[in-house]
Every structure is written in structure tokens, then in C-alpha cells.
Length: 112
Image 1 (cartoon, one colour):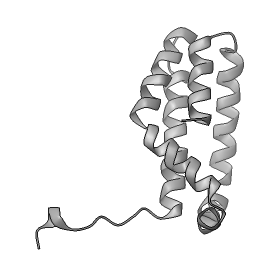
Image 2: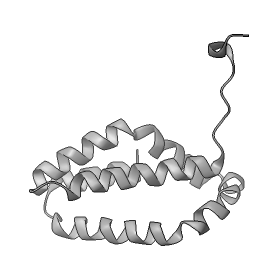
Image 3: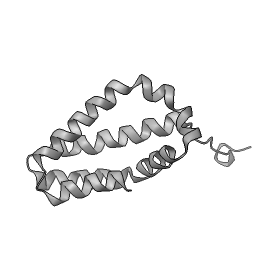
């Protein structure tokens, strides 16, 4: 059988959670590295668009209690990283609270 014909393995709940959090981190980092909030918002929206599927998959995981429970060990093992990311998100939100493009990027992450 050719390698291209093989079925792909569905990602595990932990892999979905990891991709979702990595996508969040990439979007936040894109905003943090820009000198102005307007540029930050555009950069965040661009990175969000590149990783939108990861946000969608993570949101679906959150809605499925059984699959979310399967990701619990992974989530607990990375709780410190997630807390750090939440702090970074809050700082960026505070810095750019009056910028519509940044606020739109945050909204997109919540409701992809």
C-alpha cells in the first residue's frame, strides 16, 4: 500500500489541546512583538487565520466532556504554562484595550 493511501490517525485529545494552546501562544506572541496596537492586531489576526483550525478543534474538545477528560493529564502537566499565557494575554489586552483589531483577534480566538 502506498504511504499516501494510508489513513491518518486522528489526533488524541492531548494533541488537540496542545495544538490549541500553541495556537493561542503564537497569536499572543505575534501581538506582543509589534510596536503599536494597530500593527499588533493585524499580526494577531493573520496568525489566527493560519491556525484557525486548531482553535476550532480545541473548542470542540472543550465541548466534549469525555474527550476533554482524556486530555486532563496533559492539561494538568502544563497548567503553569497556561497560567503564564493567561498573564501575557491579559497584559496585551490591557495595553491595547482601545484597539479594535486586537479586540477582534481576542474575540476570534474565543469564537473561531
